[in-house]
Length: 390
Ligand SMILES: Cc1ncc(COP(=O)(O)O)c(C=O)c1O
Image (cartoon, rainbow, N blue to C red):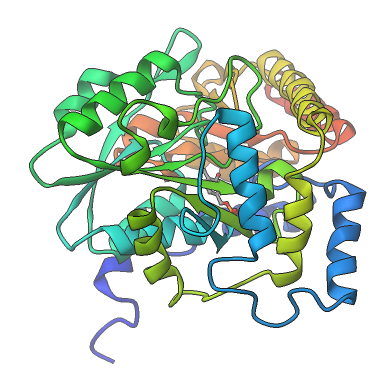
């Protein structure tokens, strides 16, 4: 075979680091704080709602292409109640196979080959692959540590826009840094998008995991409703990451465009789970507050443990990831550090460099997930103490 099986667009995307690290966790019996999935399931009544839907034959056959009306209405009601955004469930909401498909469909639909996409680096790994599949060119704008948190340099963002820029791909709350973009930053982003006539795809899957401050959806800023595709997901909010129920909201022209791509990816997915998620979105406020408070306590437990072990800790304002700097421990290569950590301490983490185009910018940073049971986090913190002992 003269030509490699994998095409040129995807050649740089081999196996993800998550597969390598999860295998290492298994072979060494380590605590896996690499991949971001909870180690307990979400609310029992929501699991029961899925069982009920299966038994009652709801969603066992192809559901409607845009998603079941109950879920589209629940998404619209949720956004109105939370953020004062009003979406027509029939024309402005689309259900997808998780946020992952929403990202892929949005980029495949909205990009022409050669279009530039500005993304905040470090970024969630599917962004780069999806931009590549769509034939786009990614233009990273790097978030940098500044006073205990990662910040966006708005001048750098403005300077990254060229005549070829088609869209901004945002993520707030931001994985892996935990940064939550504030009013001032979002206002500036909105002004820039309007001034340069850019589309925005904003990944807000961690909207309910904000510990300090509040989540502000970009679509609610002046001029943004008509140019923004907002992506949500049930996975993080309801701790059912395997169900893969996500959604897109936006103006009819953009949602229709995304649907055009989505219908040829999965067409539909997760029939019975869509009914369960429609119920989940109607859970009382106390559920969402409880989830946030529980994760805030876990952030602090693991954050304190990491600080005690000698890491510099960037305490996240949102998401369920903590980014750390390993240099105070005498290391500067996150890859080597993460490959050695399971043998050394029995804990698995992810090197942030995998989320960068400018790998050197991410080299000394390592990410830990804290969406695990308290006793697991306490044990991980204890094990990481071995780094202090050298
Ligand atoms: C920023 C971000 N977007 C999207 C996803 C994927 O969401 P889903 O599981 O709904 O496809 C993740 C999962 O880790 C994520 O961190």
